[in-house]
Length: 325
Ligand SMILES: *Cc1c(COP(=O)(O)O)cnc(C)c1O
View (tube, rainbow, N blue to C red):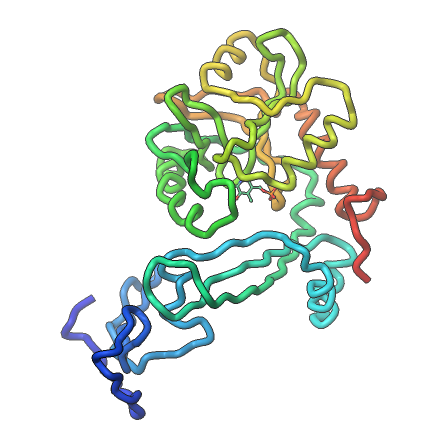
């Protein structure tokens, strides 16, 4: 972009000039703002100075500047029921498939400064995920594991669905793609603990060091997002009672030793969008490590997918589902 291309549209109505002795930092905004649009197709457009636009999301909202934002499912069922009924187009989805519900809570305080927001907005968006589930085929993912990036750390916010966690993970995701991998396998600590896959929790179905058949996932020690799907899978596996279920640490050394000993059956991510997502390969220390998830069915991943989608679609009764209308 170039300054000589600048377009200036002066405001016709000016705000009253504030008393300079009573200015509070970050709360008073000028009559004009500068905007420059960008797109991957056309690059930078001409810079434009124009009247300050007081949109319903104020340009000074804390969410935009400091990612004061969380998205999570809370006790919103009645409001969501109304929303679905009002928007008739969504009804077929809500009855024949499932809706991905994304309630988001954002800080809207139009005042700059890193501080707790005193104004907020909760909004809910719905998105159908029906056809995705019914395809019935798994597309396993390859992972890029490099300890130079961390997703979360002890004492941080990695165990909350906070906006800031996700923006900062995109750089690693791009590097994974440059290395021919689809997702990031997030490692942590000196011993390269395996924590999560992209924005999914991670499960390893294997024969552990003690020769026991085990479904393992890292414990909720502050760096793991306590996913609903993770909880469901642990509960289901406990109910089945057919193998050991463990919330335990898993390191890259544990994994490579198990692969050498032919003790790995399946590795998969878990999350609302895909339910389970098999892992086929991990690029680690310059070497592509193959995980035999698909060769082993994947028996357990398929069973979990079928069970959870049967419950979600109402094909099976469960106390995990609530009839909305
Ligand atoms: C959302 C998310 C998950 C999965 O949570 P679900 O409630 O199962 O969808 C796992 N890890 C991260 C980092 C996430 O953001």
